[in-house]
Image (cartoon, rainbow, N blue to C red):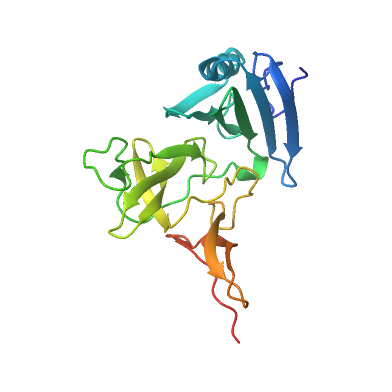
Length: 235
């Protein structure tokens, strides 16, 4: 497989990413300069992830964060210089195959960390109380502010239904930046918004003019404190 080079004045993308044999590969170059690579693997899920980690570290890249669950493993980090290049990668189990998504930042995304309101709290990765959210697990497979650290969503039962709290991580703690009734769509190809955090789109239930139920995509934007839905247009 052909590798990518020149992604930063010091950092070099390893010649083979990942080092294991992939059945297919797709590359998506985003308008702002970020790159998203997709790999599909056959064979053990764990081998696909460990091969990716081995290639990144062999290429001199820094793994700053790693989280996993039964169905996915995620890592994030930097090239040789965190001010030049950041990345995150997610390997997901998909039955007999697995798929890896690898996102490399664009130069304009490498800003100082966004200042967040509120207390930075410990994230409840292990649930001790049984409730309707217990069959769900926290998902840390995104980087919402592109700082090279994994962010994610934690399920919570609000007394009526399961909702998902979005957290932007700062070290071992996180800031809750929004709550969603459904998991947002993967923002891997989304550029940073003006407030330094990506937009999130959620498929929300609605009823059309003929009374038919449907799901409508609603894009939430970070206002500097929390994710907020779009304001309705004045009639």
